[in-house]
Amino acid sequence: MMSPKFKRTIVAWGLLLPLVVVTLFPFAVMFLTAVKPAQEVLTPNWWPSEFRWSNFSGMWAAAGFGRALVNSLHVSLIATIGALIVSIPAAYAMSRFRFAGHGAFRQFLLISQMISPIVLVLGLFRLLAAFGLIENLNAVGGVYMAFNIAFTVWMLQSYFDTIPRDLEEASWMEGGSRWLTLRKVFLPLCVPAIAVTAIFTFINAWNEFVVALTMLRSQESYTLPIQVFSLVAGRYTVEWHYVMAATLIATVPVAILFVWLQRYLVRGLSLGAVK
Amino acid sequence: MHNRALPYLLTLPSLILAAVVIFWPVLDLIQIATHDVSRFGQLRDFSGAENFRALLADPDFIRALIRTGVWTAAVVGGALLVSIPVAIILNTDFYGRSVARVIVMLPWAVSLTMTAIVWRWALNGESGMLNSALRGLGLIDQNIQWLASAATAFPMQIMIGILVTVPFTTTIFLGGLSSIPDDLYEAAALEGASPMQQFRRITFPLLKPFINIAIVLNTIYVFNSFPIIWVMTQGGPANSTDILVTYLYKLAFRIGKLGEASAVSLVMLAILLVFTAIYVRLAMRGERA
Image (cartoon, rainbow over all chains, first blue to last red; front, side, top):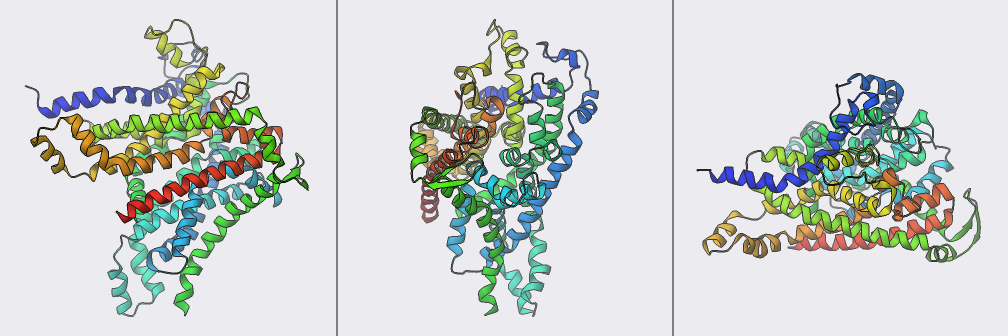
């Protein structure tokens, strides 16, 4: 006879099947189009007659992928490093001090977390324009950094709270200054949490659309999402095999990273939520 | 003395940065919304609520507002209906569960822009792979021009919205389910409760705080969601799939009605603040419990 677990397996996969099909469908479309020979893209066959791997190198040149990749790295690194530099001290203060304004700062973070750049996009455009920073990748990185602060402080604080104070207190007892304790005891323990937070900030910035669309107006400054979008929007003929190849390359590394680290995100967010 | 100032010094940089980048634009938007403004952004006379009145008289705005309500309710509700059973299934022990989890979480890992671009191609009327798949299965015998009219484009966008919202929602519910002790179900089963009764009497009530949080957070995210609709149809054809965010973008950067665009922003901010207040209250209630 079938074991109960085996039966459960069939029921579970049976029920999940529609969702699994709809979820995997776009990935299949992306992959199969990316490897189709150009003349087959517009014919309605699913399977390509041969796998044309050279589409990827063709796309790299035709789609200006390299420059967009560098631009994306540029803004994402500024956003990540910048957000960490201002968030680590803030999260440390929130975790280790009780001070007037503690609650107010938390509320402030919550509210700024709820406001997405799209709502403010005109104001942001005018802010950057006032300083002549349209087209400026550093400024776009700075905007990402500001919009990520709520998230990074929230994540870091929830991890910092889980680190027992005894360790730091022991170090103070032995005469270590706060700064020394911070450097030698506290921060080393936080490296994994900081790394995870950094990666999620990086992914956020990497994927961002509306700010980049608004502020970056010429091809030289496009980030990946805008570059790929520009290959599609407002064109009479779209080279879909190149577009899908670009989408695939831009997506897969980040997606793997995300799936791998997703449980940390959940843990961090839920730790923060119950506090 | 030194110690008392320290926390303020530590939080100050993040506060200043967020304040400049978030609150300066808000103040600027209030300025523009209450003034007569040229399309290049020069403020002219103070005009009070004139821009808001112009909005209310604009049928496209009213339609976008209503559509935003439909979009948000449909995506949030749909994601909820899908995520509860999915979370319950993923919470049981079966072969291949970790693979199933990864598949369910996949849409979360891809940027909305890229997802929308892929779907725009998949829904292509002439050579899109959805049409060829449906024809291959014998479900349709003529190509459907999915994105050519709102009647097919908007439901598709809602479907995609649901698909990308499910991972986050399921994750919240998985967290909720893992907090329900197993012995409750064992006791219920001993008493002869059917699975349906167990769901209605145990799972659903205990999951309710998580459902509330998911509804509020998703409402905020979906309400703000721009890339899916912008990349697939840019709110078209003829503004028929516009929601507030896409309409706002057009007003600001296509038509150049900066005053009205700022007014839309402020209306959205007000709605968001209400949602945030609800969220804070829910979160606080959870804290006390």
